[in-house]
Amino acid sequence: MMKDFFRFIQVLLRGAGQVMFQNSSWTGAFFMLGITIGAAIEGLPLIAIGAALGLIVSTVTGYMLKLPLEDGEHGLWGFNGILVGCAFPTFMGNTPLMWVSLILCAAMTTWLRTGMNNVMNSWKINSLTFPFVFATWIFLLATHSFDGIWGEYMSMPSLMKNFSPEIEIDLNNLLDDWLRGISQVFLINSWFAGLLFLIGLYLSSRWAALWAAVASAIALAVAIIFQASGIEITHGLYGFSATLTGIALGCTFYKPSIKTAVWTILGIVVTVFMQGAMNALFNPFGIATLTAPFCITTWLFLLPRLNLDTPSEDESDTQPDHSHWHKNSRA
Figure 1 (cartoon, rainbow, N blue to C red):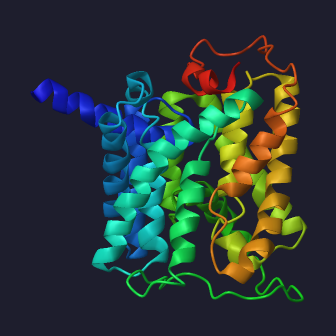
Figure 2: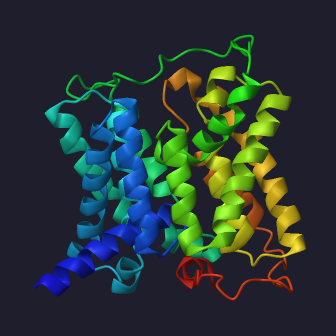
């Protein structure tokens, strides 16, 4: 009995790690620690509770639907659910019906992932975190129609207007801004959480940690150079999708090499512009883009199926096995 319990905990932690493509319970443990501490620092402890609940619900749903157990063992049922759990308390008021909605949405992501992967199989791409994005969009938009779920912390819908950067960037805080770009993957606005996430990545894959760090730095630089919103830059909101793109292209779907690095850097830069474009597109709806810029950009850079799989001569023998991510994107 205890053995099954600890195995289930391991599956849950792997689900947390898979948000950044890591099949590691240790990585997942550091991610959960970062979420908990970061949420507490922000004064929003409900985010940590939501993350745990969403992770459990989406994982249990996989068992209940008798989906392929291999996916469950690798944590692939849980990573969308944990993001749902982070998003709902971030954007919605704390009401009983919010928690009911969170449970339903987290469960939805499990079968949405399976269905989307079945469709995308013919295109040889993976659904990534889009089940989380799509399901969460449904419930965020529904807050405009139901009084029982309240978008207390959502932006007010607004039409596009002449843009102003709003505030100057404090160059003395660039290190904090860089780490927040990583922490915002889990909707946490904390440099310390970002540091814990980097440590968790390093425990599983030095390549993943490197690309997360590089991607957030590139995104920060591009956003500053092109004069994006100062508030969004300092809160790391141009870094999180770019961070995921960097890990996905740099060492998950392609093996690390010089050609892969060039392709990945290009993908990171495009992700920043995709983020800005989608911010403008979704302003009239008053909902966040979530990780959609990452999903769309990564699909655009995977669809050409470029031959970048030759590893570099100095590739580490500790490069983790990502075959469980590839299997849904192969014919």
